[in-house]
Every structure is written in C-alpha cells, then in structure tokens.
Length: 370
Image (cartoon, helix red, strand yellow):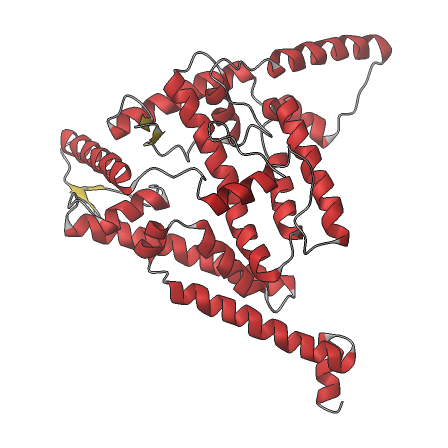
C-alpha cells in the first residue's frame, strides 16, 4: 500500500525541501577532473562515445543557475508579479523552464522559499501531466504497461543533477520493478514498494490531490499584463500593435508563443479582461495548437499499425488537458465518449477476427472466404 503525505506527495521519488541544496554537479565535476587526470597518464588518445560527448557539452550547473534566475525574473516581470505563488498555489506559467532549470530553482538556496516551492509544484505537475494520458488509457484497456513505460521515459528525461539524487534512483528502481511485474500481469497495478511514483500518482488522482495548474484568473491577469507590455513597447517604437501577421506599418503581436493555458484563459475571458480582437487571436492560436496535436496523434497512429491507436491517442490527449482548456479548444465530453466507443468497438472486432482465424489479419481473410 502507498502512504500519502499531503505536504510532499511525491517525496517517494524526489525531495524538494527548502533546505535541499544541489551537490551532484560539484561531485560530478570533481569525478570528471580526476578521471581526466588518470586518462592523460594512461593514454595519449581517447575516443569518446556520443553519450560522453553529449555529457561534456552540457552546461555546467552554475550556468544553469544563472540562466534560471534570469528567466524567472523575466517571467515575473512579464506577468507583473513578485512571486510565482498566490495563496500557496502556482500563479505563474513556468512551462518555458526546462527540467534542469526547474531542478535548480527547486533545490538551490539562492532562490526564495516561494520560488523553490513553485518549482517543486511545477515538477510534480509535469510528472502528473505526463502520466495523465497513459493512466486514462490504462483505465480503458486494463493494461498498465504503457503507464509504467511513460513514467520510465519521463524520469529518464530529467537532468543529470536530478538523476544523481537518491530520491530519483529509488523512484526509477521502483518503476523498473513495476515494468517487470506488468510483463506477466499487465492488468494489475504493480506492487513496487513505497518509492513507486506511479502508484503515488494513481492514489493522488483518485483522491483529487494532484497539483492544480495556475488558475484561469491568474493566467488571465498574467496574459493581460504581458499584452499591455507588448503594446507599450510597440508604441514606444512608433508602431501600432496589430494581430495581423502581414502588417507592414504596425508591430505584429504574436500570441502563438503563449502557453495553451494562457490562451485558454483569454478565450474563456471569465473576468472580461480582453477585447474581441484579443480573444479572436487567442482562439486562432489555440486552435492551431490543438490541430497540430490531433494531426500528430493521427500520424503516430498510422505508423503504429494498431487499429486502436488513434482512439487511444485521443483519450490520452483529452485526459492531459484541464477542463478549462478542453472548454476553450472545444473538446467536449462527447469527443471523449466517441473515442472510448471507437476503442471498444474496434477491440471487439479485432477479438472476433482473432477468434475466427488466429489473428486479426488472417481472421478477416477467413471470414471473407480467402
């Protein structure tokens, strides 16, 4: 069984306490220096693997810290905020920070307590978002293999400093154990011990204790501040702000770089902060993003050879969005139900073909008398 701690629900695979300081980078640098010295004495030429060259080309952690501070300061300024939190909840869109930057922000004491807490919440939110779609598919298919594979992929994609931590290793080992168990019992949730982050996620999602994204109110306020700044900059340069990409006399205001949640807050405009023109521009940008997502789902399904893949991709994409984002982009519950029905009917047909002839392909041929 998994014990849930409300204060640090994901401490089973990561510790983002206020006093935690990253020390993996200095250790790695010292190890690399010692290794380099030994190599120089032992050989005159060394051929590095691609992985080794990639590791050497990575920025040092001090540079990551400096860039993170600069990026966070810019985000706060753009949103007109002094803290990324509001009433203990995320109030700033941190999606532009990469995983190493988030880990730096969560773990280094040069950042304020609010900033470290916000980074920890964003890291947890990203992990939950990465599992939301696969978890929805697991509930439909009764197969947890994809969910544990998604967790492994996510954890493996984190930065080297985070992967060097004992918390990460404990979580990754638990996921590895989970993957072993689902090979023989794909329909059962693995019992991989108290460090299993997937089991924690499933428990938290059942109780509704997952991390809430920044509210629509906060996102709308941030977007309003950013737009006003862009307008002021355009006017300071003697140009009129315009949402016309082909403008030759004004300054094009490009909202396509806004996050989907920020665009959703503009489209819904719950507090009446935006003009019709701004809402129209946000809706066009959001529809472009959702269209690209659907196209990617279709292309991925076409390559997979699995007749149920497209419906599974739709289920995953739908589940990964918040209710507000689904409303803004026009993804109704009917879309989800249709995808579910498509999956169920396709699976039933495949089962019938398999029973008739051994597998879906030969079964269909047998039914046709070929």
